[in-house]
Amino acid sequence: MPLSALKRIRHHWFSPQLWLRRLVLWGGAVCVGGVAILFAKGAEHANLYLHQMIAWSPYLPLVVTPAGLALAVYVTQRVFAGAEGSGIPQVIAALQIQDEKVRNAVLSLKVAFGKIVVTLFGLVVGAAIGREGPTVQIGASIMHSIGRFVRFSRHETERGLILAGGAAGVAAAFNTPLAGIVFAIEEMSRSFEERTSGTILTAVIIAGITSLAVIGDYPYFGHTSAVLPLDKAWIAVLVCGASGGLAGGIFSRMIIASARGLPWNMSLFKRNRPVLFAAACGLVLALLGLLSDSTTYGTGYHEAQRVLEGSGEVPAFYGVLKLLATAVSYASGIPGGLFSPSLAVGAGFGVNISQIMPYAPAGAVVLLGMAGYFAGVVQAPITAFVIVIEMTDNHQLALPLMATALLAAGTSRLICPWPIYKALSEGFMERAKSRAAAAQLPGS
Image 1 (cartoon, rainbow, N blue to C red):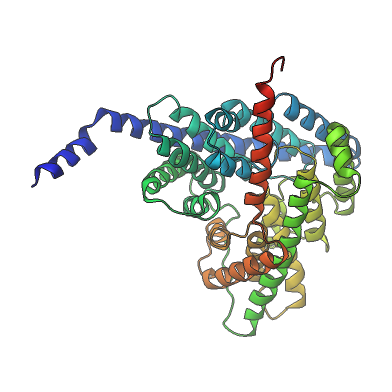
Image 2: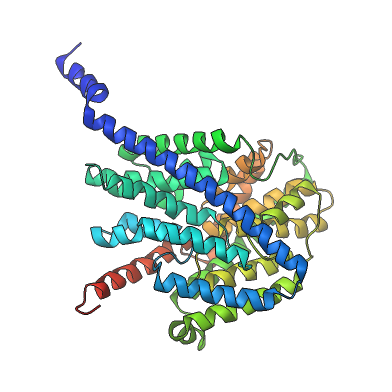
């Protein structure tokens, strides 16, 4: 064996520095998995408290939701600046920010802690938000913060650890390891670099093992056995893909518009009176909750699960109402993600489509609706159908889901040319730089 090969083997297996890096990476991935599990358990309890409040009186959100959102925005802006929104745009921005101080501020443990606390509080008071997007920022923050205490190369610190933390967050949040890898490739990096691939894969595997060890192997939405016959039922693929892409593109434009500047005088109102604006958003959410028989609050996880299992119904316009509730929640400026609410919206649209296509299995159409709308929102079709497959443990619908997601993503780009998370990351990057510059001014 050549001497050079022996040196490489010795360096790979016996280098103390390499083993230190590996232990840091593995330990960080375990931490990400553990925090994601605690966050998920907290979200379940938040949902329980919310429904206890609604059971006591469905009119309580008319007071609690406006006051709660106002408090959430106040705390976010005063204590946890940078924790607002999904969390995925922050991670994408951090991958591009060159200023180390700005990047450290975006991916700080303080912001990650605030993301957890305020997101859970938002769920308690009725905001239509998810925990998966925030888990991406939390995972990236944990890995990045741990990496700062060890001598990693700049490339590994800026790319590998951040991507690995975000991917591990997705894997642990949904209990879908493959989706975590695909999401890191397709959405957060838009490329797959050889130097970061092993780091990402290792972090996702360890975070996934942590999740499995603690809460077991379970599909996020349970097991479904729906199939789509290769006949006229495939028309559902075209309908779900086109309608999901159309609705997802419209929603994306709404979210991007709310981040760049709302129409009329609302943008000025939000900028000058953010707490009062959040209270107004909370009132709108409460009214939407009354219209939807209290089904538009929270993540939408339980509503989507009941629809898939056939154990419950949702209002006829649930998809539209949940879409509006999610948009209003995001516009308010509180922390919270779009993943779970988007899947719930897609399930609602799937129910509507199945009612006009009785020749197609209803369960299959609901899954196609979820994949179509989700792909339309994020414009990441591979992530969309992989997440739906892993969450429902249904591989028989792989081809229909894939076709639906691809059609939906293409349709969405006609409505909204900018991928939502990339567009939001650009705005967040500018705000992060402005905050950093303001913090350096004398007397600030």
